Length: 145
Image 1 (cartoon, rainbow, N blue to C red):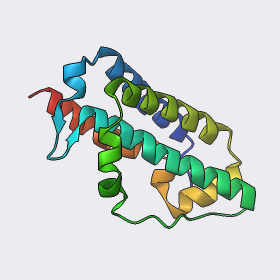
Image 2 (cartoon, rainbow, N blue to C red):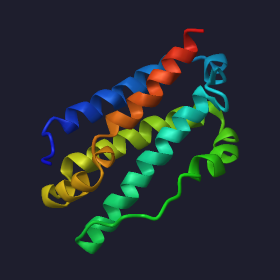
Image 3 (tube, rainbow, N blue to C red):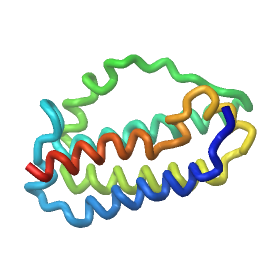
Image 4 (cartoon, rainbow, N blue to C red):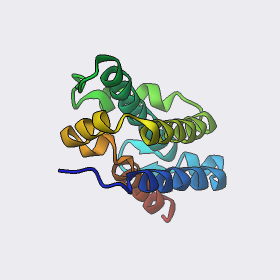
């Protein structure tokens, strides 16, 4: 499967969506429930965490010159939940925006051959909009209640 060359535009659009969202959120909005266990703030930290995971994959893949696949269990979200909840809301928002912007820039300038290898293994590591928009849609829905 070949990497869609519009991935950068899609990623940038989801980063803009994060930035636009956090600029209009009040502190009360940041504490709005998103699902059973999360708040808007936690959803933003979650996005930053998983974008940072992809940056780690990029770093190691680039260093090793071949695809690096981290061994991360499904329980990472549950393990991290208390840590994410302890992060002040505005810090969570800033972390989400800064991390998304940094990752977008890295992906746009990354080695095409290595990026293709990463994409072939896991599209969501390159198409960050898939993960970001999934949770941003949940946040938007929660804020409408």
